[in-house]
Image 1 (cartoon, helix red, strand yellow):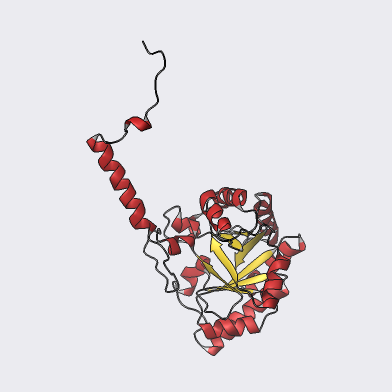
Image 2 (tube, helix red, strand yellow):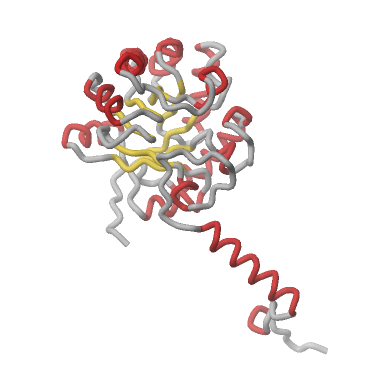
Length: 276
């Protein structure tokens, strides 16, 4: 186990890492145990993602999770996060309707313990980002593939595949930067497009499936652990473990022991005293 740094990661920490060329390790977490393990591993940032709709709740997309559900998950993650900077993902319709709703929703994430929030969209949500930052809330933008708009963009499609398309992504990212965002997340872009956006901004640029030429990498924890139950398998998902196999094996072994009477054994039972 690596030495555990204890100094809290802040936005200034992220800026220094960008200047020094140190890649940020960014991971999703939706519960206390996962956040605890990520802390022990020295992860720099944790995203309480609206991907919890699919990874934790079994929904077909990210659209069905509510603000209250996201806040419950955020509280759990924040209880474990001592060093990592925690970003709360603003769910669908928690910021789109108005600037006021955006500020109130983002504020609820901060009350829950998050250090910052993330919202999807570029130019069209710039006023929301400005309203939140003006209220003293740290905001991360999210451009490229934006899952909350998946029906509008025609599915989970790679963005920025041509120079012109990549420049449109850059335009969106610049609008978010100008609105006061401290960082931008790029999703599902070719490496060339990721590099183009990073070079065109001064704030940190992180990627989830956007190639190596960015300031840090985000992955979905269920993807790398191998315990996602669903049909979406993005190309950028990299499996580092097979918890699905191990969990099913453990449950099958337990079921066999219960059915055969092998569990509980004497060491699992409480002892009596002065029993009559």
